[in-house]
Length: 230
Image 1 (cartoon, helix red, strand yellow):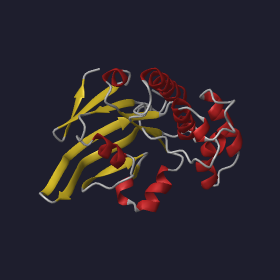
Image 2 (tube, rainbow, N blue to C red):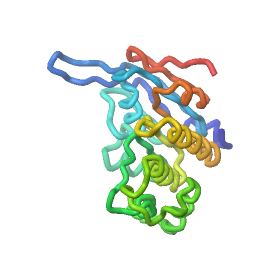
Image 3 (spheres, one colour):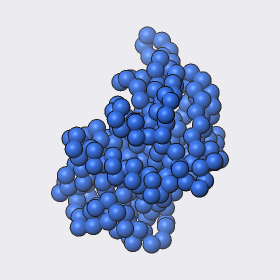
Image 4 (cartoon, rainbow, N blue to C red):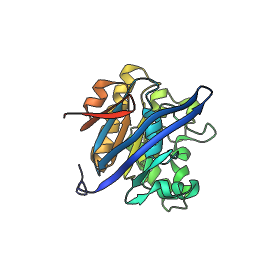
């Protein structure tokens, strides 16, 4: 973990998520508490439908819980509106998903540059180029997503996630659309970037071997988080 590892970069208190369905109210989880230190690596596992991706979205401030609070980098995400949460995430949070979420009309370089350009940051092109070189795509800067393999597209997504030096990276099944060998290379790269940048990693996965590489492993089961011993 990094030099700031004593700082609680992400916390959830009393986190509750309920949905209204034709058969009545469905409670996905109730009163979850979670504390994550800066530079840590945390895997969240659970069966399909257990709510692990929903939990990740709440921790990232992409959605709001039914009850409870989430604090990111010392600020309460759940006290903000959608624009406020987006502003708080900017420069602090990176995302890598199972779907690559690249814009097909932009080159690899332009996809990585886009968040910085939207935020009005300086030196965006140089930093985007360096990020793509870091993930081994220095020769693919001008390629469009359709001209890249699945593994290459996910590496572009990784470069985009890390280009701003985020405090926290959220990854939701980042190898779900990749074959095993390509997926292993992406996971190796993900943990290398986590280590080199000291970025806190919160990873949703169904793969016990991937989870074992994290310092902490949490299982979401029957609406409760269970942590396994390291």
